[in-house]
Image 1: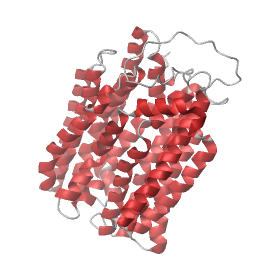
Image 2: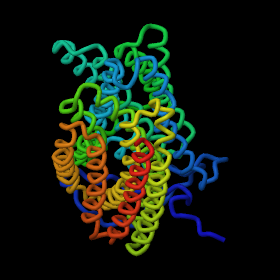
Image 3: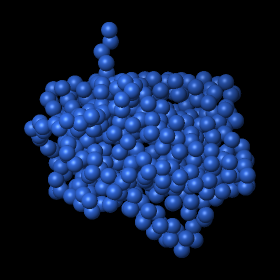
Image 4: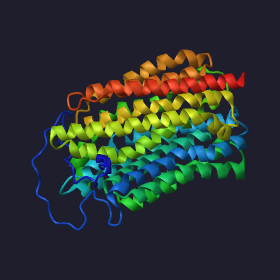
Length: 476
């Protein structure tokens, strides 16, 4: 009989507190805390949900988010008039900007909410206070952003994008609390409302009122706002002053995540921004039509990481040898899954782009390459879970920003020459470097097999190169 993977074991018991305000550094496991009787332990799955099913429910939720663009994008592109149409270029750019700006409203708080909820004693109260602080920050930040953008004469589609940022910040915080409560079905419902249903609202809007970017983003903003209100009703955030100490701790612990979070979003979306500035008109839309082949692996791995991170964080407070075993086992699962998606994604890209973008050859070539980045992303996820577990987050200040600078330098030349495949390979290299850099920083706690990961990337890259060669020959 096969052994149950660590990430499919029952949800973790309450974890350590976030720590005390002050410099973030390594912490020692605390002595066991006496547990009080309770009907349903905090962080345990609700009755009726087998523990090993929970990770796959999170995967389904992330698949909904990742597949939203895949399912709706072909119809949106058709109504806009093609991948090079001004409406599609503006709408897709607004969504990219929205994802970047979301970080400003929520950096560090989702992790703080999850960890606080799992803290024994006053954990739920602290988590709800942090959640309430996040809601206030999102609403005030969204209103301020709208005012500044309106005074600067920003187009309407960007105004809608700014408000969607604030709404999504509320949704992400609610999902963090639901994850700690082991409520994957509700988590999935919010995921659908903020992604698939939001895209459908945008599609419906342009079908009814005209194919304009502002109309699409207006529909998108309506859906994200309704989802944010649902998240507030489900998680019941409280006033921050009910647990000021926990809120201050969350702010201090989340400080290193602000530059990191901005940088990781730029790493994911910066290639489209770079193309918008350097490439010929219309090329950004051609590239963005293939970007779903990068977002798919990222969404799947991020979904499963809802379970992986809880397992690694729980183990970080126990025996170091067991912590290393679980971390390495999780990495093995994550990188193998990333490699499988890379190979299948590269092979299936020509058929996928035939459906998504009418078989555009330039889009197809980009789509063949992009799935390979999932392997480096898997290494990054596990490595950062280890660093979070030990609260050794100093590296987050500089590692990801440094990788972004290198990635921009590598992608600038091909972007300026409309070499979209070169931009895609630069993105793959950047994610591989990101994973290796964080694995190197985590080596004091767990010696992760970095060379094995490099080998998987090389093998998947060869498959992508072979598919590119065959596709080019077939077009000749």
